[in-house]
View 1 (cartoon, rainbow, N blue to C red):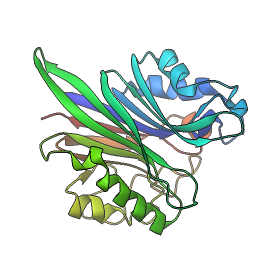
View 2 (cartoon, rainbow, N blue to C red):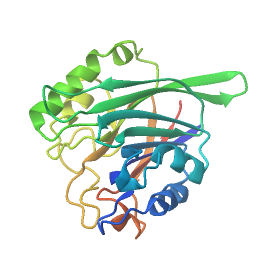
View 3 (tube, one colour):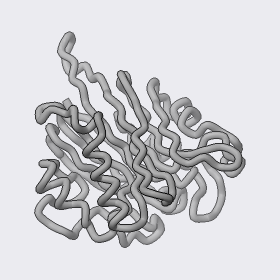
Length: 247
């Protein structure tokens, strides 16, 4: 069974033209028709995005029956964080706090999905949707906090798992941690290389591979960034689209 995953920092649906246009984001999501969508920088009740609950609105616009939101930052009016949209039931969800000291609040949203591969033969997939900090030291500490969380520690080697989102990892410093220590494979960069990541930032002329997907217990079929013209303007990041196979 194939599983298409899309990870996208939507920048509150405010494009590089400084216009709030949720319809552009929805069109991009609709075009790729992913089974699972992992979003970062998703507003809820903020004036800059018309006080909308963007996760709920996008789920309605693109017809996803299941969604979950993990709020990380509280604004004077509204809040924002990560959101997961799914074609499959979300059995449980929790937001893992990855904030280090007095730095900007960051988080990782954990969800457990139930996928019916065959009638009466369900599969469970653990999904971690994160947005890491801007400094290398901070990001390393955040991955340490994630690995020590109850949700991550309870994983068995055979349970399929996805860790994806905006890693802000310009120099691939976290890559060996995932591929050599945690035994994950990287869909957006060769496991044995410290360069060659799919470039996603800035959207209009990408030079950095900030948006990544690591997985374990799943077969990677292919991965790419979005090629739609609208994606060069809709956000400051490009989405990455990964096709996986459940063994």
